[in-house]
Length: 193
Image (cartoon, rainbow, N blue to C red):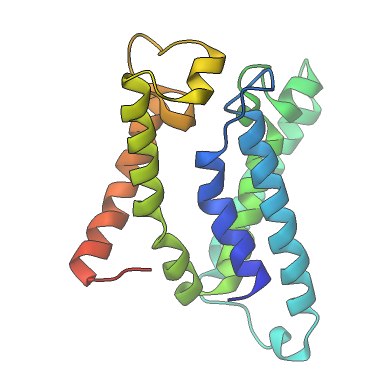
């Protein structure tokens, strides 16, 4: 496994597990930091691999999806540049830093590197999804029992509902729902790490 692939795997799932009560946004800022570090790791390794003569042969299958992604990112960047409050457009709202151009740009970079890594590497990386979902669900159950140290340092459950380390009950539900197809695929194919 290459350094770039490790960076992609960390970028795909580690932000879901990142939480730290020592910052003002204990669920969002650590996620952006982990995503940025993992993206930089994937980028540096991908850049070194792209410099190799064999890497310049042809574009990976499905690379045409990157053009619309680039167009959307350019449109959002243009909107951010002309917004009434540029810092908020770039970094996001104070409590929701993930809604700014920074988070979107990092995710677009990860998508680009994932596309370049090929389908076999992507399948290996997605195999981690059910395990991350299990950890998030277990932390949510611990929160309901009052045993999560991050939540205990931050405050209380939102409306009595667990948010795990995702930070929101709704976002936790969305993440776990997205991981169900990965878990089913792994179970039906008999795959494991």
